[in-house]
Structures are given as C-alpha cells and as structure tokens.
Amino acid sequence: MSETLELGQHPNLPAAFSEGPCIIELNGMKFTSGGAHIWPCKDGRYHGLVYFKLGTNGGLHTVSTWSGKILATASRSDYRGNFCKMRRVSFTLAGIKFVGDYCPDWADCVRVRSTKKQDFSFLERS
Image (cartoon, helix red, strand yellow):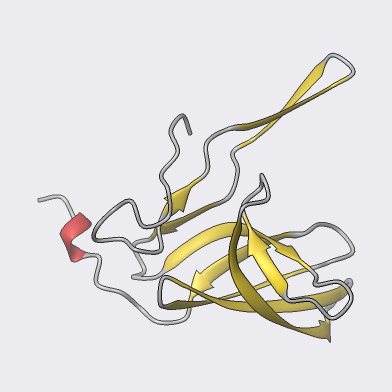
C-alpha cells in the first residue's frame, strides 16, 4: 500500500479509508505495518482492520488507525472464546455500523465488517 486514502475522500465510499505504510525504527531496525484500512468487498460489506483503545477512568472506548488517529467511539462486550477471552467491538463510521471480534490478550487490532450490505455495483468492471 503506497498511498493513503483519507476517510470520506472517495465520494461513493464514505466509510473507506487506507492508512499508508507505518514504519517504526528501533535500535537500527525498521518495522513496517500496512496500517489500518476499511474497504468494500465482493460480499457487499465493508471489511477492514482497526485498533481498539479501552477508555480509561470512565472515558470513552475508541477505534483508531495504527498511528492513533481516532475514527469513532466504540462499545464492547466480553465473552469466553475457545482459546482466550474475546471482545466484541461495535462502532458507527460515516453512518455505517461495524462489528468485530478480537482477543485482547494478544493484540489490539480488530478485523471488522459492516453489519449491512451496501451497493458496490458501481465498482464492478464490465
């Protein structure tokens, strides 16, 4: 991913965004991440990867990009998965509701999907 698409930049895809390459340098070594993103998929839903931040001292929970830009406030619920405690995250971005599950013991990144199908037919190639 070489370019960044800001949230709301594409007129027909209000919830789509793509964070450019994120690079951390530590002790002379570089670590690269593709960053957070949400894109339309063939199943008619948005899919992506965002980061969940737990609110502290009664503060609001948020979802953000890899670099920390807050996208939306979020709600969460915990449940027991097969291998670890799981967390379900839900939030609304550009008027579209998203949900995703992740294991907070392992990471803060959440694979998310929109809850309702959208019409992405204008993206199909003829």
